[in-house]
Image (cartoon, rainbow, N blue to C red; front, side, top):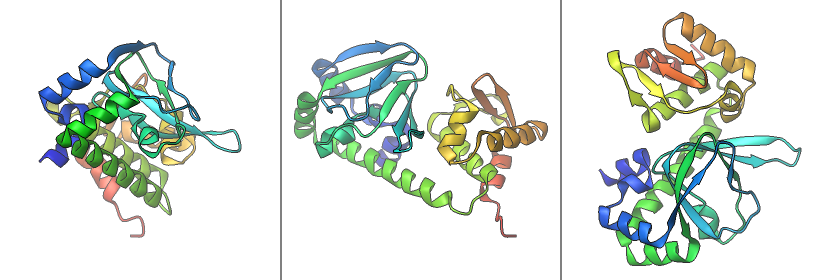
Length: 231
């Protein structure tokens, strides 16, 4: 059960209260305005952040100057732990999608905390393995898979991790993502996302608002994600 909690709810929520208290004592709370860069690609990994409220996007610059969106992180997620663990400069940019409140912990204090809290170290390891598995699955699924199916898979994953249950079995994604950002995450053009959402709105599968998506029919979205495209 602990592994499920760590993967679905993030590092912070999977900790014991005594572990959270120790981290609060080691760090300090920071607030970031919309668009603020929390971490810069190539910078020294001198601290680890734990998101308490808000959402950030993780991106990386390519050699051709284009920016690739790698992931979304939200409440309870850690930021910057991979660079600290491998001793290399930060591999990605992290930008606030809205107002963000996070606990900032100096790298040395975070290392001391993990050395003295075996359970927390195990939770972090599970979270990181889960992230690597997610990245591998996403890369594998993009080969030979249609844009609508990739988008359905992405929305279902975001719904499982961050969705807010509503009436009639609906799920709201409280993520301020643009169609372009969704397109970047599945490796397709923005027009592909726009067309799929238009069809799904017409079929009553989703409702879209300004940078908000409400999934009305989860099972219909699962059918799209699981559909055999060779059939």
